[in-house]
Image 1 (cartoon, rainbow, N blue to C red):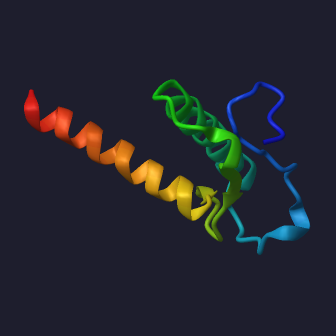
Image 2: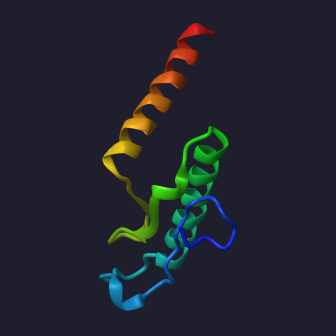
Length: 95
């Protein structure tokens, strides 16, 4: 990923022509929130030992200005992520 801070998050510059504008919606705040959330997710996955090299996370906003994080990964990475989530779920049930 092209993250200057490491951990697999790609943040594209905010493009005002890439969204449909709704009066009163704070798109920049939504995009910033999505950028922060995506970085947090990438860091958490990396901390859990997940290989973030094939992970693609992109900050976006919805029509109402809410932040959205787009996640794209290979089928192999999806299998690995599913196994990680199942392992965490088993730990939660065990405690």
